[in-house]
Length: 178
Image 1 (tube, rainbow, N blue to C red):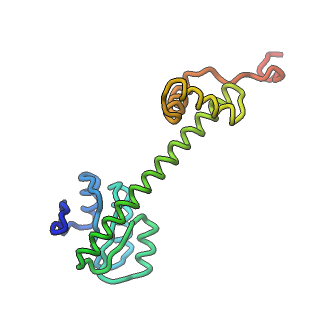
Image 2 (tube, helix red, strand yellow):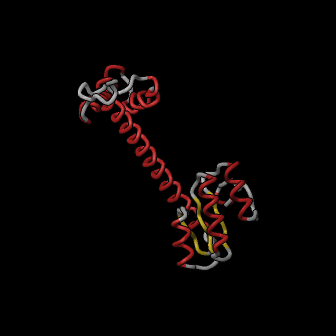
Image 3 (tube, rainbow, N blue to C red):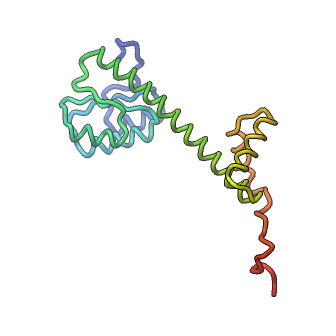
């Protein structure tokens, strides 16, 4: 790895240490050398993926199709058999970094969409609007204030507790003493 121009954070760490090291160091990629495909190795890969928030490449001594499928379910982005070919290693790193960036772009898009949907729901409830009118309200405010629509949506969601309750139905007599 160092010969390819990459900084190596830790060598010959036990798999539990790798999870902790990656959580602290925040590397671009975690390379995990797995001597055998065991349930313990899968559990530790799972920890690394979730604690490190970086893509994981598994370097396997043997090609174990079942292990690779399980590791993929747990979030590894690639695997390399053997790990002796520097060009193969660099190609895997390049592909993994690109896919991880795409993954984060999608994750961000989903988060922005969720905030916008929540803001529309709040406006629909509070102003008795349909979905199109609520979206138009967000869009118009974004244009008027020269801000991004998602920023307006985040503001609506964050001040929801400060807004008055939804309009009451004049025909609803359940709240009136009688």
